[in-house]
Image (cartoon, rainbow, N blue to C red; front, top):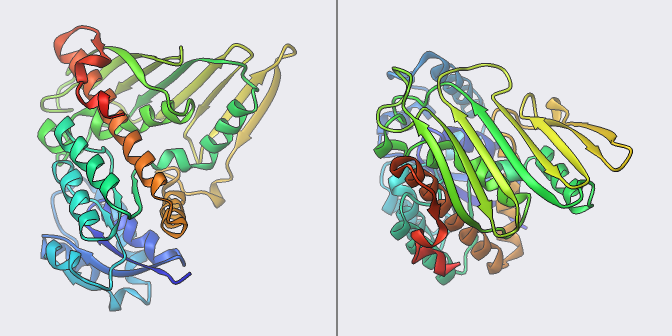
Length: 371
């Protein structure tokens, strides 16, 4: 099949996509769009200067070096006009990395323009946006995927194989503990990022669904607060979350945003016949105990052969290409329905903290009725 002519919209997180698309032989980077023409000039060699933290500037500088070194970059069209980009007949697919309030509405526009769409997480910021994007995906005949890349990482694919093979018996509990530095100033207010669940923890809640496909939450309890100075402005920097699912599984998600220690994410699965505990260090690893003799299995992904920092980031681009080439619209609809379910769970957890009570699934209706 011919290379997929692709555009990237947004040059913050989008730089990672620019580098990945340039490196992936299944794609051809045809255009890049950003409303800030200064950022477009960075791709042509202008100095990248702003007020981001030093660690982020160093990360971005490394990405810019990789992008500028690619021989195809000089032929990529650069534009600040997203509507003009959507009207380009030479674009097959669009990867969005825009502020979250724009993500769902712009994804719907991409699909309506007849382009395949790779949107970012979260699926949307509210129920109205989420339902609108779900309708757009169902009405379109184009591919749709959104940025839950961790489910595509080799380490979690192996965990899923162990579950499906019955190595853990019947899964009963899932847990995830995340401890990281505060979100950057560009994300540390609710209006910028949507809060901790939509900005970050939606990834781990997506993995809870990946480990039990098709599961739906029934109720959520969460307790949290903004307890440490100079972390976030108006949403919690730590919380404990408990989720019940219609499968009989219970999940717990704990997060803190005031430390930057090793083992940023540790997680586990408990079944009636075994358990797994793992972490996201290097490229991901876990240890499993199973069976009456408590057999031990150790699994680790070779860091030299897997994308680090954001596990599964390279694999999700191939998953996008697979969906485009398959032409199976059911894959796009399934992706969107899972995205809406994840949004509802994030909103319910956030409400549980704000209102200090258990939130039932029915309270996020009428969106729940769409699934």
